[in-house]
Image (cartoon, rainbow, N blue to C red; front, side, top):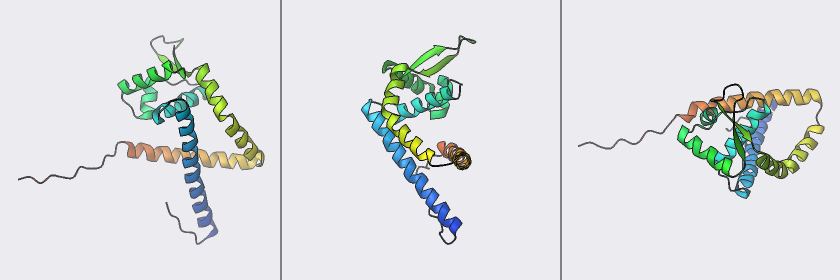
Length: 171
């Protein structure tokens, strides 16, 4: 986490790392504010983000894929989906090609709540991006995509890691 700052490259790497850490913490606080306002817990919020991302990519998420993404058992995913559906945040639809398959979608009510809450942040984001040229944004996009992939790889490698329990003396 702490980086040397002897060269300009090392200074930039340290500053970028610091900014990414602060951005992540601040974004998490904004997400928690939205969750608290609407009676959601952190896992609910992560599920809503996964549903939204999948829809944006044109590949709606299934309950099974959501469980894998959140590292939850099928029973926990069912309870999560039931809770979010009752609250009006998501809806279940049958796949039109394979009726056995259930797809999760952001419900209109949930989307409206999210848009109302996050619209000011979107405007601020647009203002910042307007100060950068297309070439600069392409570099930032590539950097963020690679950083996100790196973080997901690390997340996946530590998900199953559990600290060892101290051994009890026998005898």
